[in-house]
Image 1 (cartoon, rainbow over the protein chains, first blue to last red):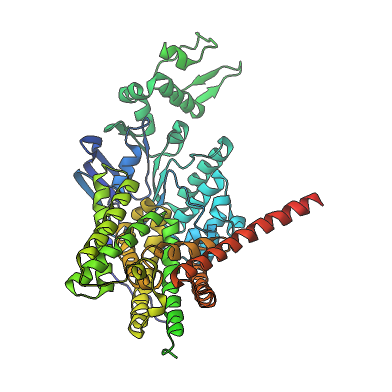
Image 2 (image 1 turned 120 degrees about the horizontal axis):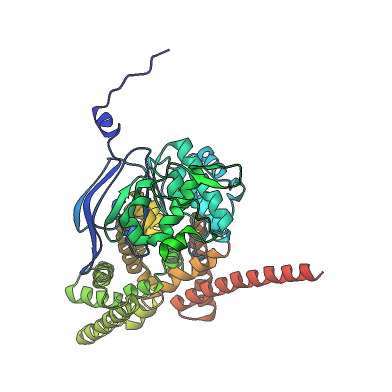
Length: 284
Length: 272
């Protein structure tokens, strides 16, 4: 038996390790005379989950498209690893009815893959029985799963999800997020995600980047939720929603039924036990 | 065998149909029917210029159709006018320019009708060589850009994100369309080329389960339409180009009927 050759590829080594997969410094995208986003610094390391949040029209999708090289940047520096494997789940994809396309054929849309791997990817997202179904006949949730499987079968180093639960009903939304969570655990790929769902941001993200034409704040979900920029952008209600959610993990139940939060960054007034939700008081 | 004008027409026509099938599918999928029409309309300008400069007519048509395609791509970037308006301007102004140019060349008694509607029965052995040689090159290039072109048709953003360069595939595809228009012009004529590209593809859609199958079926259905049209044209003494298009239309109508029958059966089953 021959021993496995010990090939040391200096280039491969230098490209691996903890070096960021994608790194952007001060990138900006312009449409005519208008800047869609400007001055965006963002880097994604291997295995990291970064979530972009921000109001409508704040340039979340634009930023992602610029990072992926889909649209051109007008300024700034953008670097990505050579031969970076990306799996992309776009925000909205309408496949014309004139194109006959089964789920199985969709899986090899951008590259060749082993039939067994395709089967496994479909199984992973729970739609193995839909392989021969035309994509136009899938429900919103099934189609999102098919798109996710298509991205996964590429074994991406970076999975990019642009509002992955758009057009999916509430129950399907929770199931999809659970699935994405599982994927991250199993594959260890980095994930760049655009999300409106603040709960998900809290639970599963290493880093949140809050956009509003520029990076308004960024950091761990806790730090962002507490930052005045975030409150100014989303309003106190959203900030409170995040805070309340955080309490779900950081509270204790007392014997008299009261719930007391621990490890909070803000003041509590436990004797002011009114039925009015905290967010409304903050907003008022 | 090639001595017989009818056999030459059949072989030439089938060659064009085989190439037109897969390209026609992309025209249908990408909703480029009017774009194809515009390129075809510009062919007469290509013919006129080729006769004026005394170069090969097919080359002239190819050059002008390519130029029109590139002009459209550039004009689209300006984004001042919508694409359909741009197509309307390019299609009819190039056709008019061609007609005006032809009328200037009084020394040439060219048969305008044969360019507009095709002259399938005047296909020469050289034409056959050009159709099959050019056709093989077109199909080979199409196979080479198949994956990026198909992925870009489903979603240009997806293809770009996953490093497939869909924009380059789109440009190559436009040049291939120009080539097919140039070699198909003699068979069905400038005004009918788009139909040979689109109708077999639309017919194939009813039966195909995958894009590759649809492309192959479109080729087969196109070849069948050419054969039926030519025999019909011989039988009823009708012009060959339009006869081929009518045959393609008949096949399309039958595919629609099959759909109606299937639906009818289902209704019948439910009522029983």
